[in-house]
Image (cartoon, rainbow, N blue to C red; front, side, top):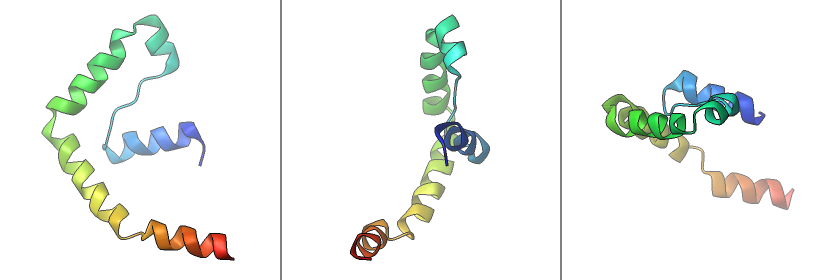
Length: 70
């Protein structure tokens, strides 16, 4: 999954907020605005906790070790 696809997923799952490079170049404060929205909107924190619980089930360390050993 490329960078653009990853950030689209973040937007889709509502665990964060993205801005485009074009938006940032036009108005660098757009980044601060996006950060402010994420930090002050309770649903972002709720979705982040939800995503955290899902990611904990992945057992990333073991999976990575298994892949390296293969």
